[in-house]
Structures are given as structure tokens and as C-alpha cells.
Image 1 (cartoon, rainbow, N blue to C red):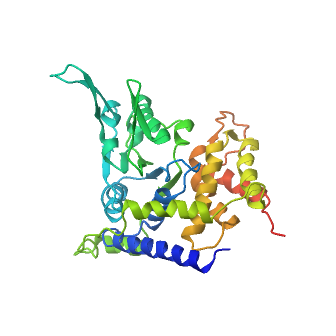
Image 2 (image 1 turned 135 degrees about the vertical axis):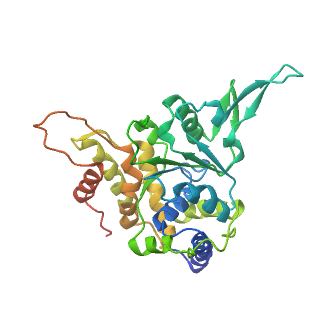
Image 3 (image 1 turned 120 degrees about the vertical axis):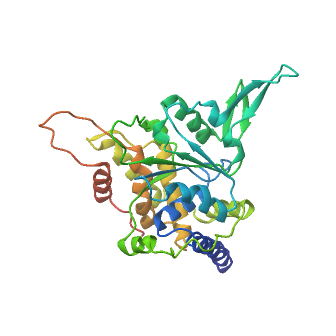
Length: 340
């Protein structure tokens, strides 16, 4: 359990995050789940003690729901992050993302000219499935390693480095799309689906003058302040090896591999990310420790994009469950731990 000093420090962090949410709502309506998912990705502890903190977010939703504007402008401004937007298209050159070596006209030597990844803490990969795999893979390499290698030389990316990629669920007929392979989707920390606003908020959106946007959101945090949170979470929300909670997380991950409808179950990276997400959820909920409720709240957001179902073209095959239904069944069938 946390002592008074630890609780006060946590409350100070959470007050800052509440102020950040309030500032973002000067410019956007709703999107509370997206805001919380983005915050979780920004402050999650690293996979290993010396690894970079944070994680990457896949945002799914139809056109015109405010995903791009939220990431590129509102979130970046309030958290004091440098943002860069890359519009993915079928003819996007991989070098346009990471940079390339070019010959200096004077010295005739090849020098590395960095791409937009090197000038941002927050990268918006807009409509990522519109670019072919060769282009996508350059971004995923940077996401996984936090570096870019060109001509045998490794170039580090800024810290923090978070990619928020958007995909559109409903695409026009004839659009050329390149689905993300499971191995690439595994690079994302979590995913979220953005839907339409509730009717009451939608009414506000169409009012004139619009009840938002009169004030520009102000910066609440900076990178130095953000960096304190992942270490606080890692130090104060420990999941001990062999503990009942550790066993429960392991059981959930293993269960994705014995489901007969699942072709590819959750990776080790997915299990680690589930534990990290649960730690972060406990912190954001102002709780003293990680419990099963935090694991369950993060199970689908972390696992949904990483599970691939078997494609069976047989009318006699009766299991037509979605990924979400299978994950729900796994939760129902995996026993919760009980404290002694």
C-alpha cells in the first residue's frame, strides 16, 4: 500500500492530467476514451527498466470524427510535444518518413538528411493502411527500436517518441488498402475505436456559435514533467513474479493460444504490454495497487489488434465469433485470482 507521501505525489500528477483534459475540452467535444488512451500511451512505463517509456496507439474510426485534429494539434499543444503529421498514400516514399543519405554537392560526401520522425515527439501516421508494406515497415522499425538505421549508421529518435496511427473503418469503394500484418500490429501498445458523439454532444457540435473553440488550449505539462510519471508508475505499481496477479495475466495470454478459432495468439510483447497497461490504469484510477479490474479494463484494448482468427471457408464451420467475442469468452473462462 502507498504511504501518504506517495499518495500526495500521485495526486499531484493526476491533478495535472485533469487540468490537461480540461484544456483539451476547450477545443474538442467528447472523445474522452481517446484522450485517456492517448494519455496511457504517453506515460506507460518501459517494457524493461532501461527501455524508453510510452507506447504507440492505433486509432480506428470513420472519416470526420476529429481524430487527426485531436492528435496533431490539441493533444500535442497541451502536453508540450513537438508533433509531425505524415499522410500515408500509395506512392509515399519510405525515405520521406525516416530520411535518407544524400550527397553533399560541395564535399561529395554522403550525409544523412533526417525525415520528419526526427523532429517530433508525437508522430501522426494518418491513414496508415493507404501505404504499401515497404513504406509501413520503415515506420514500424522506428517504432520498435526508437532508432533509424541508414547506411549502417544508427540514428536515435527523440524522447519521448510516440506514434499515433489512424485507420478508417469505412472506406470508399475501390480504395486501395494495405492491411497491417499481425507482426506490425504487435508494435502498437493498444488500440481504440472512435465512434460518433452521443446525441447531446452532437447537437452542441452543430450549434452556431459552436460552444467550443473560443479559447485556445494552453500547455499544461512539458517533457520533464511527463518523464516523472512512467518511473513513478514502474516504482509504485509492481507486479511480482509468481504473484496471483502475475499468474492471472499469464493465464489470459496463454488462453489466446488454445482458442480453436485463433490462428495467432498474443505474443510475449502483448503480455508485457497488458501488464504495463494495467499498471498505468491503476495509477490513472488513483488506486494504490494493480488488481484484476485494471487488467480486465485493458485486456481488449491491448489484445484486440494482436489476435488473428482462422479464415475457414466452410459452411459447416459454425464458430463465427468476432475477436471481441473471443476475448470476452477468454475472460469468462479464465479464473480470477483470489487474495488469501
